[in-house]
Each structure stands twice: as structure tokens, then as C-alpha cells.
Image (tube, rainbow, N blue to C red; front, side):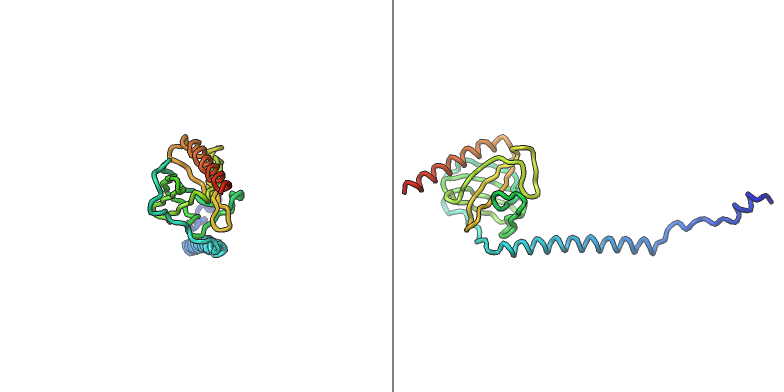
Length: 189
């Protein structure tokens, strides 16, 4: 026999799969992913505990008056004013959701299906502006309506994105006009 044929006859095919090692890696990876999700959940709960001093959110009054503006879109969350990455999670303010915004003389009503609704009284409104980001959401310049309001002893920025982004400018104008009027009336008293 030729040496080439002898070598070919002596070779054994390599083992295709080591099932025990593969199952071990899959189980290890699944446990690692579960640990990461558990740690994220605990971090979220811990942040909510740290923000436990935040008072309960105001509810819509029985008769808020006629709507000045109304829109639907997305609520992207709330942060400490001026600190766009410091998300507030207490009382469901960190939960993203669909939202229906209604501005009345009494204030801003935020209705969120699947999350806790809240109301921002007109006296608590501080500023409205267009921005590009809030914790967890970054858009093009001016793509996000940010409403700054006071709750307890905190200033809060809440981010909204209307289904029709062209409405944002009207919202900023109307909100800032309302805030200016309320400030002027409060100073005259």
C-alpha cells in the first residue's frame, strides 16, 4: 500500500458536537442574562425608593374647563429639571406610554393608557420648550416637547412627542403664554 492510503485509512473523523459543553454554555448564558435583568429591575426599584419623598401626583379636577389644546402621542418620561439623564421613576413617571395631552385653564392633563395618569396644575407649570432628548430618548433637534413643572419641592422635566410634531411649536407658545399670564397675575396679588 502506498503511504497516502495508509494515512487516510488511519484518520478518524472529528467529533461533530460536544453536547454536554454546548448545553452548559447555553445554560450559563441564560443564567447570566437572567441575572442582568434581575439587577436592572432591582436598580429601577431602588431608584423609586430613593425618590420616595416625591408626593403623590395630582389628579385631574372634576371640572378642568374647556380644552385650549389637545393632542395624542407618546410620553417618554420625566427627569429632574436640567438633568436630562436623571430619570424619575417614582409614581410611574418613568414609564413610557401613549399619552393624550389636554391643556385647559386649570392646567395640563396627561392621560396615559396602561400607566398612571397625572395632572399638572397651571400654577405648577414653569416652562415649555423644544429639545432633542430626555433619558432614554434622543431625537432630532426640537423633536421633543419638554414641559417643566414643579411638584413638591422639585422641578421636573416631562418629555412628550406628538403624533404630529408640527404641533409642538403651538404647544410651546400656548404653554409659555399661559405661564407668563399666571406669573403676572400671581405677582399682582
